[in-house]
Length: 153
Image 1 (cartoon, helix red, strand yellow):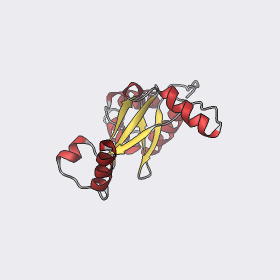
Image 2: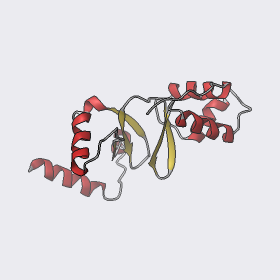
Image 3: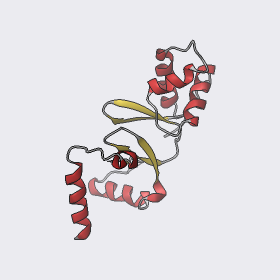
Image 4: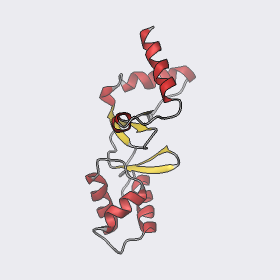
């Protein structure tokens, strides 16, 4: 994503600082709650508006991943995400943990004749905390069994 210049207002600066301090990928409301501790007068509408401006400029990422909830990410370098289908937690997955991204994009482009410019690679599963709590997600057991049998073959 190409970054464009965006004037850094006080509200945007605080939003960006708080987003960078968070290890999760918060919703606008979660970020609003955090920013209100520093700027009690800020409105939820101001947070939404400024998050849109920051994401449109390439300063942050807007993630449309889980159940229609937008989440935000201060890390703009190329990376993938993995989302828990139970609790909605989203974690970063560095691309070096995967096969060479250029190879993946080459295969995708060759399949249909595209010149691939980039990709958004997202995984979904059950996070360690939910798995430890024994949270059962519909069809998850069947999907895990299918994966295990495919790996055995």
